Image (cartoon, rainbow, N blue to C red; front, top):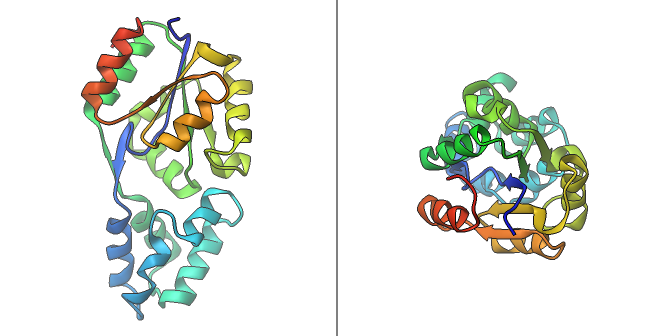
Length: 202
């Protein structure tokens, strides 16, 4: 069946990102680089706690100051930590086609408050979704079942009515385990072609 709703992951699906950009910027203001660099990698314990909503942006800042001897202000840290994204134009255009055709769209993302605020400020496309499920807001991360349940409650759809696009197979499988249709993004061109095969405007 053709899906009624499309749920997008954010990073590596709609925007590319590179945590090493943040790490390099933060290190330039730090007294003790580079050994604590791992504190700012994508799957570091610190970033995972932040993306689960277990700690606040100010607590992350305090920890980076303690561990790395960071000398900048909180505002400087927030900009350096979150300014790591670039739009993926083909996917932004795909989303616009879906919206123009009246297809409801949502974001389901493992992310943190600083990233979400940065994207809202700098990327106009980000405002054009019917709803958002962020890991920091619900306290769980993909591929845990509870975050998919939250997405179902938000969009009011179940099973094959939902198409979920994510760049990580384990995250897509978290949705397909609930009967969702799933697509592991390998490239924008392949994603667009797959949506067309499903009868969606792309």
